Image (tube, rainbow, N blue to C red; front, side):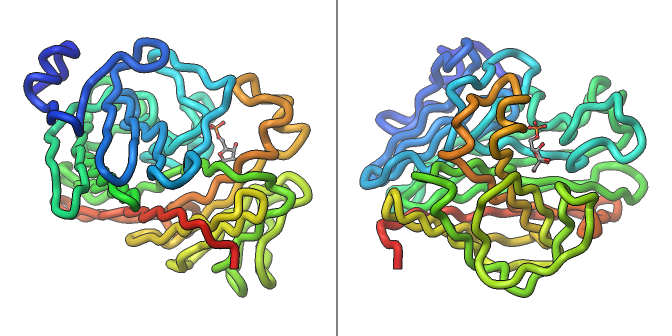
Length: 305
Ligand code: TA6
C-alpha cells in the first residue's frame, strides 16, 4: 500500500513493543524499532537508518547536531542510501550528488519479528516520473533492515527495464568514534584506492588506515571486512559486507567540515564513514530482470585488542 498517515501505518505494520511509526525530527515519518537487543530508527524519506544502538553500547551511527531534517533534503549522518550514481553525476553536474534514493520517500513493504529476537523492516522504492527525469531507467529497490545485536542492511536492486544498465551506489554509513585521530581501520592493507583529495590518484594502502587530515578514498576490488578500532570509546565496530567491491572511507577534517552547512566545525573528530559501496570501476551492470544485493553487516563490540 502507498504510505498513509501514522495511525494507519501503525495499524497496518506496527508490532507491539517492537515497531512503532512516529513523526521523527522535522516531522519526517519514521520507524522506531526496539527489541531485547537494540534500538534503531529509520526515516521513510530515503529509507535512511538514523540510529542503531545495542543496549550495551553507545550509539553506533553518527548524526550531526546540524543535520537538516527537511522534505527532499539529505540527512548528514546515519546511513544514507546512494543510488543510482555515487558522487557527482558522471556527465551532468546539475543532477544531485549521490543520486536520488536518499531524498525520495520510500514505501513500507512489510515488518516482522524474526527469530532470536530480531526485528525486520522492508522498504521499497520504484521508478516514477520524478526519478525518470533524473535517470531514465526502470528499477525496483527493496531495502531489508534487520535489527538485533547486529544491524544488517540489505539493498536489493532489481532491473525492471527492458535493457541492461549500469549503476553505482553505497550504504554511506557514518560511524560514531571517540576521537578520529586515535582510531585505526584494519582490513584494507594492500588494497588499491582512488584518492579523492589527491586528484583521484591511484595508490595502495600500506598497513592500517589512520587519520591526520582530510581523507576521501574509494578502495577498489575489495570484499574485505573492515574493523574500526576505537581506543577512546574502547570498542571495535566491524563492517562486513556482501555484494560490494568498493569500500569508501571519508572524514572531512577541519576545512571541509567548516565549509559544510550541516556539519559542526569540530564534529569531524567524532565520526568516520566506512561505506559499503560499488563505485568507480566497481559499477554494477544488471541485465533486464536481474537483481543485485548489496549488504552491510555492522557489529559493535567492547574490545580494542
Ligand atoms: O563518500 C564520500 C563522499 O562522496 C565525499 O566526497 C563527501 O563529499 C561525502 O561523500 C558527503 O557527500 P554529501 O553529498 O552527503 O555532502
